[in-house]
Structure formats: C-alpha cells, structure tokens
Image (cartoon, rainbow, N blue to C red; front, side, top):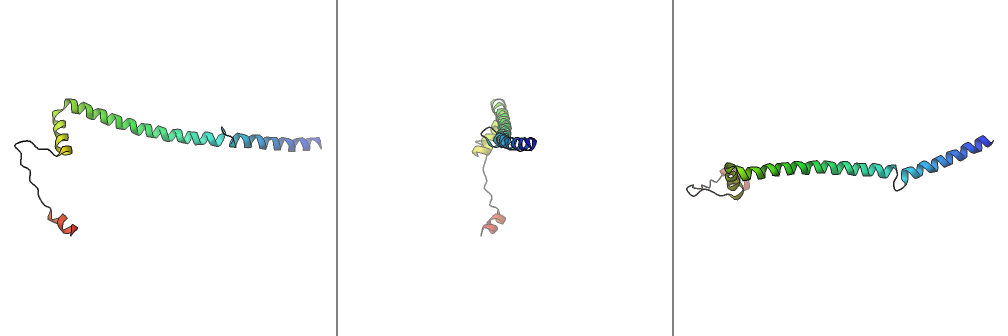
Length: 99
C-alpha cells in the first residue's frame, strides 16, 4: 500500500516538475524558440556579409578600374562621350502590344 501511494506521489511530482521545465520562461519551448531565432539571424548575417563583400569589390574596382567607372557612368547615369551620337529606335513590336 505504501509503495502504491509513493508511486502515485512520485508520478504526480514528476509530472509537475517536467511540466514546469517545459513551460516555464526558460523552459524547453523557450530554448527551441531562441534557437530558431538564432538560426534565422545567422542566415541573415551570412546574406549581409555576402552583400558587404560584393560592395567591397565594387569599391576596389571603382577606385582602380577606369573601364568599370566608364561602365557604371554609362549604364547607371545614361551618359555618353562628347563625340557620340545617341539614337532612339522605336520598337514596333512593343508599340503594337501596348495598343
């Protein structure tokens, strides 16, 4: 009889203890949530590090490569040299599609 009572008491205490461990502020669920957030932040950091590397390469090229500077000026600022002539050609296929 004492063993049965002790066993039931032990099971109840164990249930309460494990419930507390799982659901308290620093429990298992919170740890899993924090691990997930950490992984997300690490992925974001890797993407940002890749962007930083790309921008660093562009800075080096802009400082040292005149052809790249010309490429950027022509494509991003739509500039031409003094002796160049700009021709605008209408695309009939595009005009027909928009009508």
